[in-house]
Each structure stands twice: as C-alpha cells, then as structure tokens.
Length: 98
Image (cartoon, rainbow, N blue to C red; front, side, top):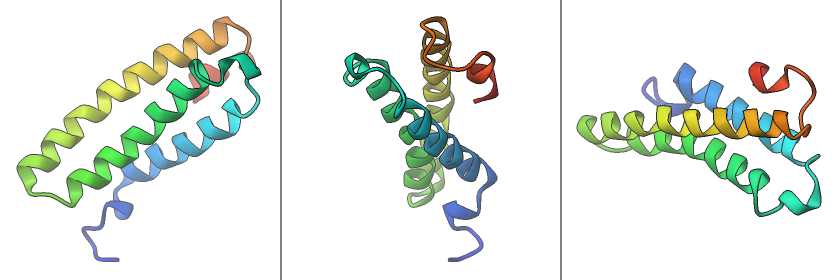
C-alpha cells in the first residue's frame, strides 16, 4: 500500500466504517424493508467509499469528480436514516450518531 493509497485517506476510512455500521443496523430492519430503506441505505453507504476509491485510481480531474459525488450520497443517507428513525427502525438518537 503506497502513501497515496485510498485506504490511507481519512474520509475513505470514515465512509467505510459508516457503511459497515449501516450494514449492521439494517440487518435488524423488518423483512418488508428488504427492497426499500434497507436496500437504499446499503447501496448508498457503499457508494461513498467506492467513489473515493474509484477516483483515487484515476487522474486528478476524475478524482475530483468522484469526490464531488460523495456528499450527495451522504445527503441521501441522511434522509434515509431520518426516515428510518421516524419509522422506529433505529434507537432514539441513532440516526444522528450515524
């Protein structure tokens, strides 16, 4: 692993940890959410570290483009976590902590 490896980036590490935590929490979701919020949260959470990793493997202009996608995915995750909270799928305050 070189010094410029995407796995060395703090943002990638945090995004990866968030995705793992989302997978753990959504495992507890009701069965009827399999293709709803559970799926959306999992796909969205994986897209953030994936975009960072993809961009790091490209030229600097492409890296910046990939990085610019990540905040939008995080905004989507925020809304989905708030919806999960409103539906009682998360413990009180958990949406904000994630």
